[in-house]
Structure formats: structure tokens, C-alpha cells
Length: 104
Image (cartoon, rainbow, N blue to C red; front, side, top):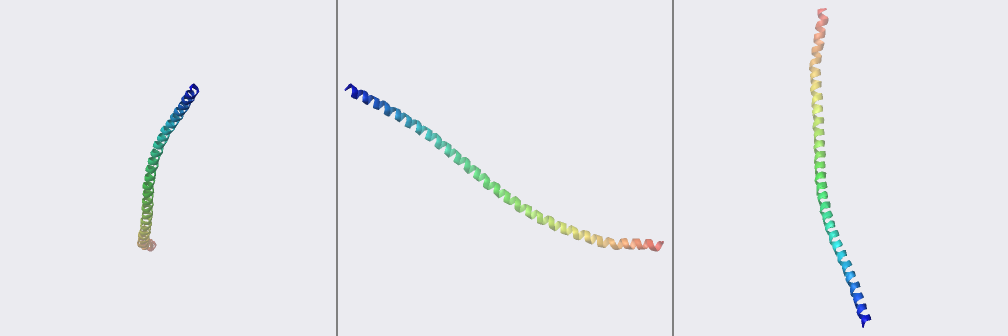
């Protein structure tokens, strides 16, 4: 009987140790699960920021394209104004230079 009691006692101690190991594993799993949830929230936040930045980038690119068109239109207008100015001043120069020739 003493042998049986000792065997039962050893079995009980072994089961108790195994139960303690399982409890520790459960605690680690819970910690890991919390870490995973935290990482998921972080990832979601980063994805949201990325989507916002991509939207800002697209808006900036659209604005850049629009401004480029406006600049090109202004360049063309300036070229026309300068061409008109040169046309108006060119005969005046010729006239003033021909007067100079006549005065000689």
C-alpha cells in the first residue's frame, strides 16, 4: 500500500507540475494575443495613414499638373504680349532711325 500511495503521490506531483506548465503557457499565450492585437491596431493605423498620404499625394500631383498647365498658358500669353510689343516698337525704331538718316 505504501508503494501505491507513493506512486499516487508521484503521479499527483507530476500532474501538478504539468498543470503549472500549462498555466504558464496560457499566460504566455494571453500576452502574445495582446501583443498581436496591439500590432494589428498599429498596422491598421499605419494603413490609414498610408491611405491618407496617398490621397494627399494624388491631390498634390493633380494640383501640380493643373499649375503646370496654368504656367504654360501664362508663358504663351507672355510670348504673345512680347511679340505684340516688339511689333509695335519695331516700326518706331525704324522710323526714329530713318529720321536720323534724313537729318544727316
